[in-house]
Amino acid sequence: MKAIVAKEFGPISQLQYADWPEPVAAGRTVVIEAEVVGVNFPDGLLVQGLYQMKPQTPFVPGMEVAGRVVAVGDEVTRFKIGDRVASVSSLGAYAERVGAPEASVMKLPDAISGQDACALLCGFGTSHHALKQRGQLQPGETLCVLGASGATGVAAVQIGKAMGARVIGVASSEAKREIARQSGADIVLGYDNLKDALKDATDGKGVDVAFDPVGGDAFDALSRSMAWNGRLLVVGFASGTIPKLPVNLTLVKGYSVVGVFWGAFTQKEPAVYAENMKELVGWHLAGKVKPVIEGVYALADAPAVLQRVLGRGAAGKIVLKP
Image (cartoon, rainbow, N blue to C red; front, side, top):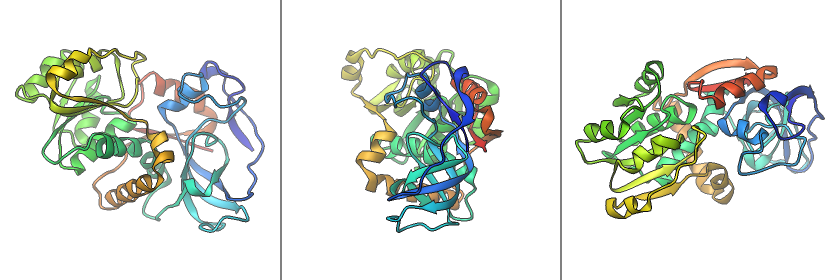
């Protein structure tokens, strides 16, 4: 079969569309024929050796896949050939067929497209965990979302509204701010003079929960814009700069800085993760959340797509089609 292969850590341009061994259905493995494959910011970091985990090379990147079951291992009990499913794992999704542990696979209702399923897994899953478990967002609180037109940002805006928050979306261009506005943001801002803009938008009170997948100068602005008992969520560093926190600010302003690592959460708290996904799917079926799919590209185009995602040139969710 064909797959996107990282033969060694290095520039994204070195990824190859090449032959790769087909997955084997043994034990609790479910083999999925890919309908669509989700693209995520961490995929690009992973192939460059810049992510928290470093798999043995060569490897196939990619975390999300939606499609149909074509084979099951002899210990699989929940799935059969022909089932429509989605799966999330740390590696292996950028391929025509994907082998996934049974525990990481879920059945898809017919009402959810493969594209939306991929978006609900990592992007919406990250934002939901961030706001629910880590941020403990409450109805009526003010939520500020950086990168509000990206896959996790759109998700955070929509989930924030579903949870009853007043949402401020921050994005770098008018086109991206319009995406945040259409996703439900009550106020949209740019990054210029962000500290002053947030002070005005909150009548000087500050932000109760901040969702930051960007880092850099924007984090510095947030660190000075938090309300008393606020929660500043560290989600990622799309700017390429890991900021330094003046911890005296957390003391005098009385707020918390909280790390969000969704991948570890799914492994350490699988029962809570399963409940989260159940809630997200329910919200989607009820029309409370709806992923923004920017485009569908050929699997072979993965290197170019990843370059654009890492360059913060994408809006919403991008998927690949084998």
